Image (cartoon, rainbow, N blue to C red; front, side, top):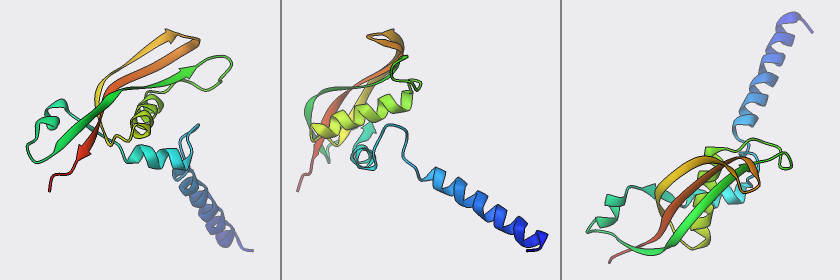
Length: 126
């Protein structure tokens, strides 16, 4: 093969590797979990007062990402938010009002992100 063909082939293989990395799931989450989390959206508290939509409160939810010497990888704010959305989805909720996230240590974690919120199910009005 000539040098031009080798360079093009190498570039194509590099691009393929980069693109496949972009479509992979975040570490520790399955594609099914990500699909469930995608069904839950975050809203601001004032959005619950809309007159064209009703919401049913289903309870408080939390999500945690923990890093310890046993578990390995670092704690992640995004992973805690994903866990929060998964907790809401398990309660059949499709909406979450985020109350807050904080980074702490303790509870068996060297580093910990904990996010809390209130889960709601949107009720369609006909």
